[in-house]
Length: 182
Picture 1: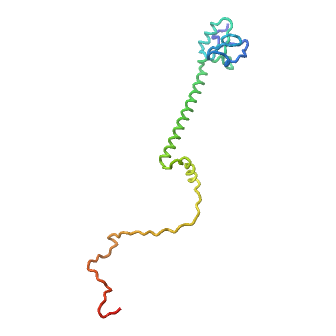
Picture 2 (picture 1 turned 180 degrees about the horizontal axis):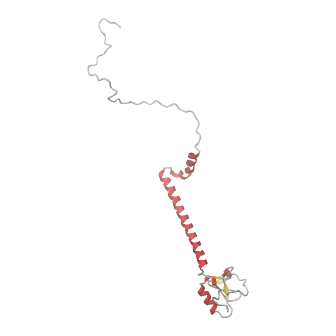
Picture 3 (picture 1 turned 45 degrees about the vertical axis):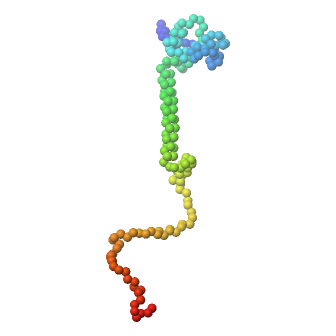
């Protein structure tokens, strides 16, 4: 004798309905079909206990909508495999969103640091790539070379440059002496 575990394990659709779920009025769990005038229940939007209770209590016609695996089991809202996939997708989305936000703020911070480090005015961001290109492939410069200018500086002599200190009265050496003519 076979053992009857769950009504979800033996669930079969006698005649598939062509009506569109998105065209029906209602919520994610129950919608009213305009063609057959019956409520259509979304078993995949319910927990396993709720779906089993609905099937056990129903008398007569019951229209349902559900996702079914290739082995015939019905996927419910609290399916461990389905929940794990949903959690994995949510985790990936959260990591991607956080990465995007952090990258955005890191980019803003780097441009602000670049702008603050150089007083380049409004053309700072446009000149950034020109400066990088000039470092990689410097431009060729041609033209005449000017001669260096002579530097006129007054150097102060220190005490080591002075050989002898003389003190005395200054005499004009070109003074006319008697008897000599120029």
